[in-house]
Length: 232
Image 1 (cartoon, rainbow, N blue to C red):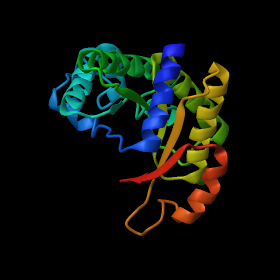
Image 2 (cartoon, one colour):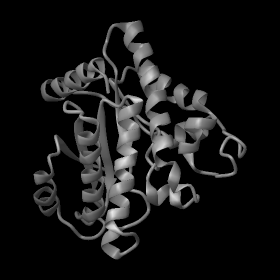
Image 3 (cartoon, one colour):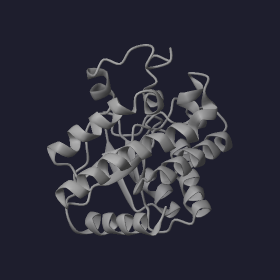
């Protein structure tokens, strides 16, 4: 990330600390509304992240709609750009490529709106939970962590202003994501980029594997997160 990118990231930190910052909404349903074909998906039906390289115009159009509606930030189309989710399509080696492409598309649209309106727009690098719960032995912790580092490095290289570890259900998976993100920040020498985490709480009042929010906070706060939230 260049000096200008560092200035953006610092400005986002300041905005988060001083006012309400509005982000976008759903990505998957917006992509489906544009009716991508099976060829667009390269026969990997449902792998939205592949559209970052096959149909960047569709992905950019979604970002453009959200910015036109007035949001400050958009999330990258990378919710499934991780080892577990891409492994379901037998393309886990494309984590970095699809992450970088997703961030680059969002960055270009954000910069377009910043120039047009004079209002700074930001990109949040989406790091989704994947489909494997390491606490239950679905995948090794270190494999997930290292792939999340690739995920984060791709997002940062593509121009993300913050990393958003989101919708996590397993504290060990959450930790793998955050540690991977921190390693990426260190590897690229990026100091100002905010690291945000959101955990998912079920209707039972706990995370999927039974962790209460107090336990989640106790486990996650020491990891150097800038902001912790809840979603879904």
